[in-house]
Image (cartoon, rainbow, N blue to C red; front, top):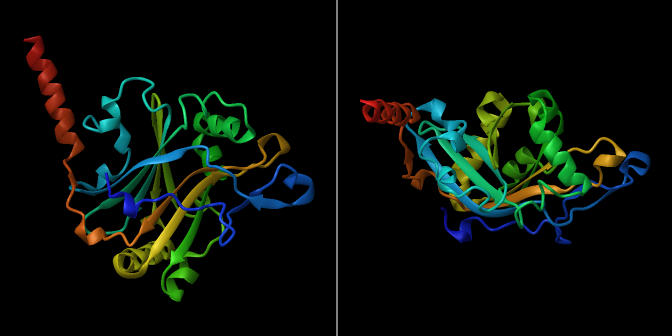
Length: 254
């Protein structure tokens, strides 16, 4: 898990840079209001280099992933944001968010909680229609601030977004390299982040009817001068782990 200094939660409700979301009356008034508390709380972040490009995806279902070592229900439901970083080292950045208390979201009755549960159970087409990323460069060169922007983006309409789940967890893979412009901007941010960039990433689901409003931030993370070049944590090929597990089972049956 990365050092806490590099991974604080952005102050989403600060007067200096409020995150504007659709209010409860948005469908009739088009009014947006500053975001309230997020549905999930950030509790872990990791950066890995992958030996095999295919291993950048569906990380939570790897046999060796630490989420699979949890007791059922521990930490409640976990939402995982996996950003695929364009690089020769096949880098991924994972942000883990958990419910404030078990069942607070998955059994919650707020409009945002109900929409989240429907979104998890929905089709990929439905997920792509609703999943929004809200980026903000809190500190950095003007060129990068302009390139990143600060408007919510329905990512599934612009880049490849993949979804994976297991009991008690849901992972969203954001494949930045699938779009030429997003790939170029991400490379600029990656190369400048260690020296001069502080980047906030927040995600939400778009509410499109009164029963789905007001919107709420699912989770948010701040990447504060993160040095991707210093990443020395590697994920072994998942295929070799599965092969070893199969061999162990076969051996036990002899």
